[in-house]
Length: 167
Image 1 (cartoon, one colour):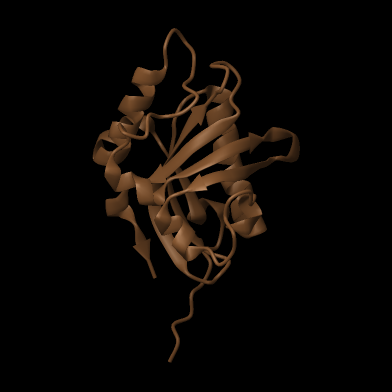
Image 2: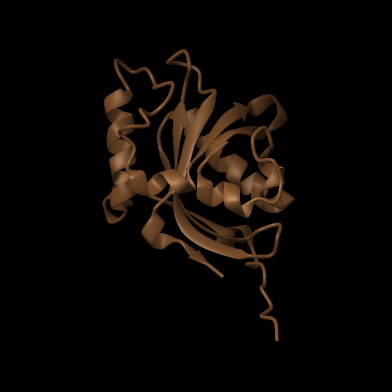
């Protein structure tokens, strides 16, 4: 007998923004924010997070994304092995719709857009059914990046490993 996986009923069921004051409840993500803040110098955003400083626990779940606001999308530049092993296609260069159905791609893009506009981290709880039909729940973090220090053109995205539930 196969379990039926049902999609959460509304966008609010799939995504809930969390106040950044809650970051202390997610130690690996809190460390990412600390590293990101240290890399922000004189009001400029970092181009990248130093890989040797990122908590090893988040690396399997990370994604580096290129921001494509003119297309309301993002392109995958790099993924950790947890993400890569679950994708049944070449992941590099794919856009959000290669990972998410249209409704969830729009939710993910909205989080990226908020982080780009505010130039601040975005923390949220996610619950969605993947294109392959598997349900994932976790707390995710998006950190805006800017190759010139000013204009957001990318993101570091990862999850708090202890919150991941995949069924």
